Length: 362
Image 1 (cartoon, rainbow, N blue to C red):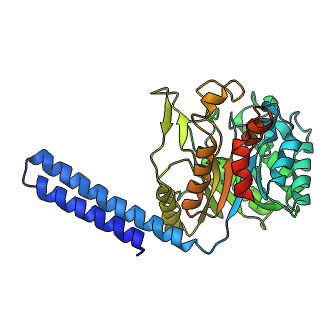
Image 2: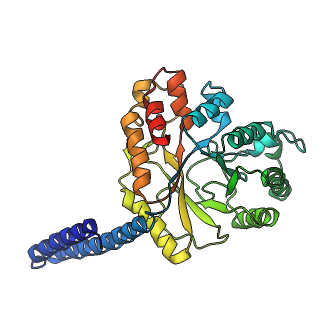
Image 3: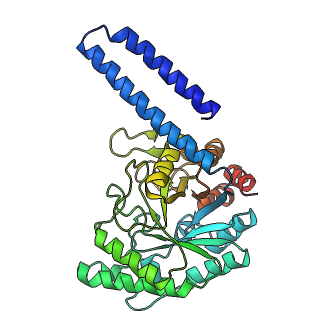
């Protein structure tokens, strides 16, 4: 037991003992409060202990710090995607999580266009960078499910085989690239509260997983779980690696219509990774660590003033995001919003985020 864990343990025990002594002689509701506090204390000690164990177990594993990179998003910010990715390489980014949107790769039925992925792979290979390639219908960025327009009117039994065929085309094209490190299959597949997605069939996910494994048994497959989810993902398919997204300050469009700060400490995510490691013997990585502004509902980044953007992401918050991710103990971290750092640099003439990223990647 580390000194930090001992200190936390004794503090909780001492506080619980005082509360127990004071309240237990009172009425039934006071007894209920005491029991509730004891349960929460025991649960907190258990979770913190698992988290600390996991962090310590990862100490000797080298850190891989990377970014998600999406050319479509760079374009929406008024940026040149190639210049953006090249600039990220220049500041030291050596790992990219790339997308293979079905809507981009097969805009016309049966007609494939991989020109975008081709230059991304070429840039990465030239820089000796590695790639996580996302596959499937649901991939990062709104609207999450990126189906081509020609498939939207087709019934499931028609478009599903066409999706499998597209996935096969992508895998076969890039599986021999020296830059390819692994795949991420779908993106937070079962998350129903975000994105324009309607199909959550587990059978489809299993079919996609088996297809990719058959086509390329040499590269690991990552499947992402949802942000802050506390359950153990025991259902099929069981990937080689699980991933998690971490967002800390977001705009609550449903209830408060204000910025919401999630209260979860870094050791909470270490606990999620640790308990999963113990039960499933599977590693976990961070595939999205929030590193860009979250504008008020209905607004895009270009529509949002710099003052407003700074309410959810500024230089101090970006540095805190890097540090928070490292404190989870997870050793593969992809920052979310690298295109946004470059946007602030070249469009808003604000180098504050870019300078933080440059220091972190150097």
